[in-house]
Length: 213
Figure 1 (cartoon, rainbow, N blue to C red):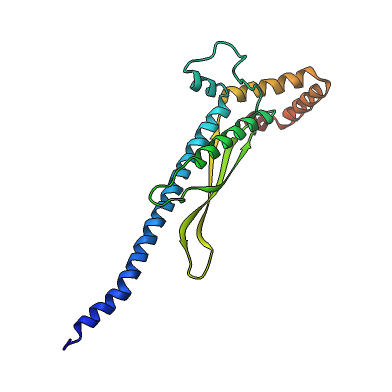
Figure 2 (tube, helix red, strand yellow; figure 1 turned 120 degrees about the horizontal axis):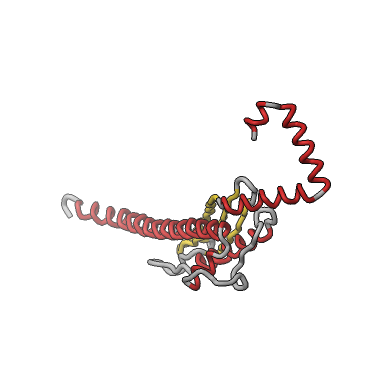
């Protein structure tokens, strides 16, 4: 009481301890939010890889479920010429997006109750070209922190957007598509006209035509 050191300790404890407690508490919540983001990002990467593999080989899903190569094509989605008719590839992409959304919505909170991915939206954007194809998965979600501002009913919300792009490569399907185009050109009058015009251009180009070919 003579040197007033006791009052200094009390004032320091009254101001510093609550602030440090709040800072550490918020840091722990931010760590959990980042952990949830890492879980969702990992799920998006795995889903994009699996989706691209299924676009390359539609029978892969059946093989993974049954553990063996199917004997017939009745129960297997072969989807021939899926790069020419992109609707079949979109079916695979939409199923991949639905599976990813179900996975993300199934993630539970860890340390703080309620801190789980909410308002999950997943969109699949397949690009099916004969030469270069890819599958892009876009996932957006929110994580709400269980705290409120003073004199306010609004909560802290972290909003995340994740986009993963995976290339699709299928040489066998590419060759099949090219063969189909060649057959169509040779079996139709319009195709024959195009081939004749291409042959004329090739003759005029000479050495350059061989290089292009």
